[in-house]
Length: 68
Image (cartoon, rainbow, N blue to C red; front, side, top):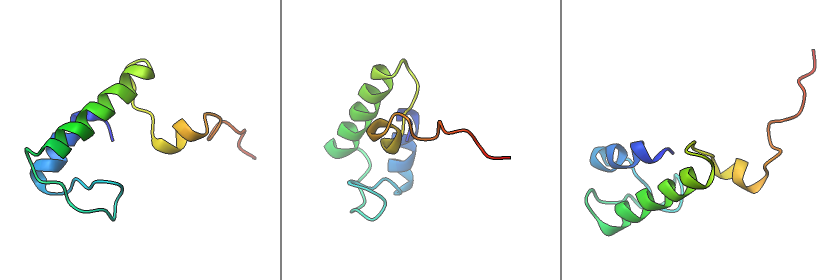
């Protein structure tokens, strides 16, 4: 998720640690801030744009030509 959404999800109670089935992170906690900083580093490493986890693991994902 882009870093701009981390605090919004945390406040709404929808921010999870470790993945979509992980425990919910409390708003204002150190874990929430750590997730935010991690997402900011991800964006900075890729020129200011968000790159999802699957794209980081396989940079060629989604680059195949579509069949007609």
